[in-house]
Image 1 (cartoon, rainbow, N blue to C red):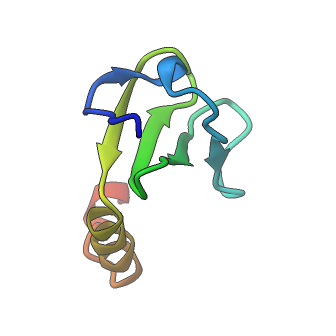
Image 2: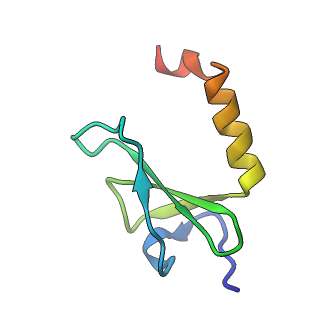
Image 3: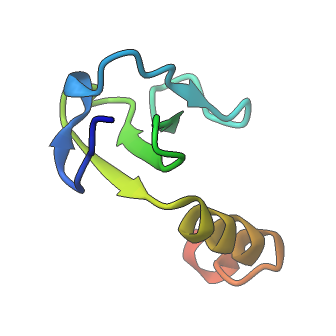
Amino acid sequence: MQQFDNGVQASSITGAQWIKSGRSNQSGNCVEVAMLPDGGVAMRNSRHPDGPALVYTRAELTAFVEGAKDGDFDALTD
């Protein structure tokens, strides 16, 4: 099984199905995510699809999403 580390070139993640939120705006300012074969999640900037990807475990991504739902990061968007 292929292992991916933080900062890997996103385009080198073969077979990745990148998805983005329906809330992303049309000017290309969005984040895209892809499931990895080991159950992890890669995240990239849609404006730089060949740039680096950040790699998270499912537990890390779950903690982030739950924190966002709880409003933990609301101050970052004010």
